[in-house]
Image: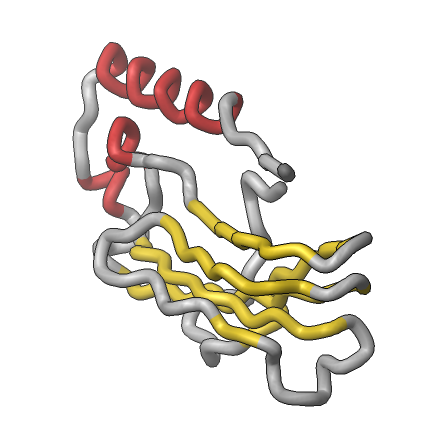
Length: 139
């Protein structure tokens, strides 16, 4: 689970591998892999100057040089999650995530926006609450 993922500085080429994780499967099973961003609607003023998109590929561990087993769709406009349903055989799998961003407002947008302290504290509280309830669900 990530609450903050490190990415290359903007601008950069859109590529897989900045973020990845491993899934270990004990028995053959149907699986649903979901990647989701925090719902930032309540604190959108603090959500940064970028609009983020993502997708991912799944490889069998050790076969990363081969074609991926499957690829998710790219997050569409304003979607927060991507998912993929796949049948996995026993073994380890690597999920390579591709993060993309587009600048949607100037980097100094907060300095330009005079926000009342009371509103800022409410927005910061909403942001912290959203981060505190983020979970990783494995069934």
